[in-house]
Image (tube, rainbow, N blue to C red):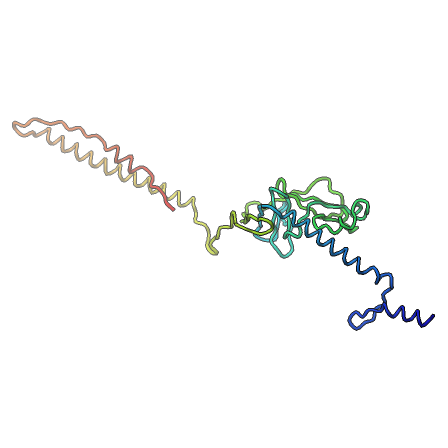
Length: 272
């Protein structure tokens, strides 16, 4: 009997590398069905994700890993190693790549309650959970007005946390893409390339210089017009004092060239 028992135990010795590991007959006999069940759950999770990505989606991608900023302009939500993105029209969710799309969230007590969350629930990649006792509560973060992201927190939050996509007095350039069945098909809008050096032209100084130049030109034109009028009046006075014999005195009426003045006083059009 001892010999038979030793042979029975020897059958269940598995070599992992060069180290012998003793596996019990019970564990060995159930290893096959467990692996099959895990593979099935992974396929179901992939199928759930594929359903969420089916159809047409409009994806916005941030210029860096930061999704949003808090009220003091500190980064409040950051992806690890990849740009942040979100989808507004269909899912209204923030994600760091399609595989991190979080549709719902489970607190620690719900996650560990098998009646509320079974094995399929725990392997569902679209369900985010907070199983740790350090941060057992779900916290909902809102980007702007309607885009949502779930994370874990150490205490129950009385309200959602709202973050903004930009800092105050700072612009960020985002890209928007059209995605069909998980594949990008076209770009709706992309960032505009800016010059790497120098600064923007002082628009206020340019406008002020143009207005001042127009005023100076107007004064010069009025001065020339006044000198011409004065010269013509002197000519008329001299002709009145010494008229030639037998020739009638003709009275001249000098109308100001209002058309020329108005055209000259009009500010020049700016191009570019």
